[in-house]
View 1: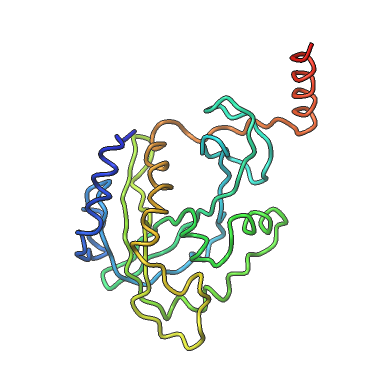
View 2: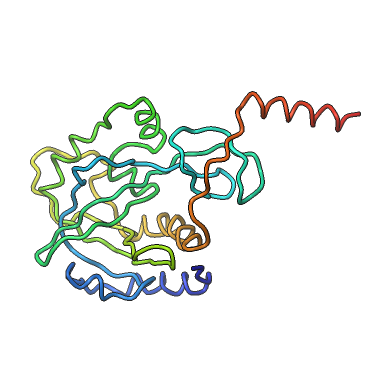
Length: 231
């Protein structure tokens, strides 16, 4: 399902005015696209998950593969390098229950205190991510979280974190600057760019099956094309 740019922008304008906190138990009753706030603790699920995704550097289409490589994008019809973007799930827990939401883009990088490029590089080597310091601090923090609920004809409703900030931190050790506090106004615009793309792609198609062009083959193709064009 595609949403118009006007609908997306209109909902974003309501973010600054919509400060009421919704109990986590009432999230399912919230309308899709609308922004709303919840308060609670955040934690990383114990189950294994990928903390990144790979996107076409031109079009932003997600591909089912784990290694950066050159592809022929089925969406933009160009050769492009797949680039990593942080994407992972967190569990939000409050007095009325718990629910899973997704963090993407730079907001996700700041939450984990690690870049998407490093996440990808470590994961490709099949090594564990250095997240122990994040897990240790999270139980001591109370967050105010801005959410958006989306759905499409092909998937169940999903929750995306648009912004968050730390309301309370009882942890004794100083936290890194990158994840100390993320202000709503300073990061909302940044993350909304990613979410707009996410919303526009909702329901348009399933994830593209990997269409990889080996680097050697691509070099040969480009060399051949370049040689023929100069004749």
